[in-house]
Length: 357
Image 1: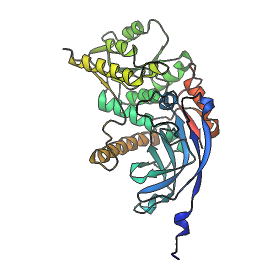
Image 2: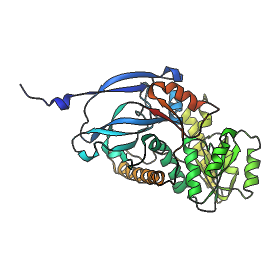
Image 3: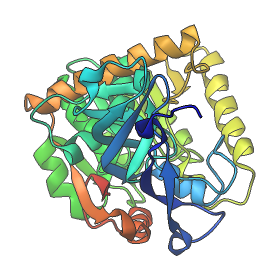
Image 4: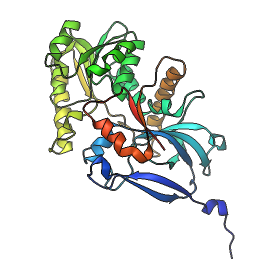
């Protein structure tokens, strides 16, 4: 009879939110299953905070390009405490608060993750505050400084300025010394003014004229999450050397056309504009661009970039340069209500919707 290590065989029970197929938010299911102890290079993380984003709304409809086959556990990012570490992982990581960009799988109470893909959260930052910055902070920072290269004295237009990404874009742009025009529901205008933005009603039929009145020479950058016809307007609002950064196709969420076709149409349009003899530039931002396969040199470079940028944004939050904007908090068991709020045309709060396992 050969001996076995009881600790190696021990399992931990996790509660997960499962998306079984194309269902309404009420069709999400809570299930429990056993997790083994971490394998080599892995850690077990007790999730403290995760969130609802546009990606999950698209996945629920089967309209997120590259999503897994149903059923699966959604959840784009998380913040939690490392409870145990597998072979080859620095044991000092146990007990630390970490963040992870997951794309799927974060809507759970306990998860297994590759230790190499974690970013440590600085002391003094609460879990739900850190959660507001994981995917949204990386996205906003890389678009603003990597793609648009916004500088002091420039004017930028942020569509959906009250959202999770938009509210961080506003703060980062103001910190860079840029003037910010932001579209949002009137109920959020005072909050946007407090962040230093000049708000415009996103439903205003004269939105373009109002932007041109504020920026007669055009804006230096537009950040557009809507896609579709919106990018045409965004491009026309640019200055002669302006930059359009498109980063989602939210306007196509309930469209019946194939999602790949919607992306191809958008990408073709952006590419065509870049061939025109103007000083303008247009691009599509994807947080996973260049990620490569696990273990590859591309993945290592992607992880270094992600860790560097998120650590910088965490530092801004810790030092008071950013304010965490939390729209609402829901227990994981009330994920359906959280999604319904996220997808509501009249969001009642500004920022990110947090799920608390």
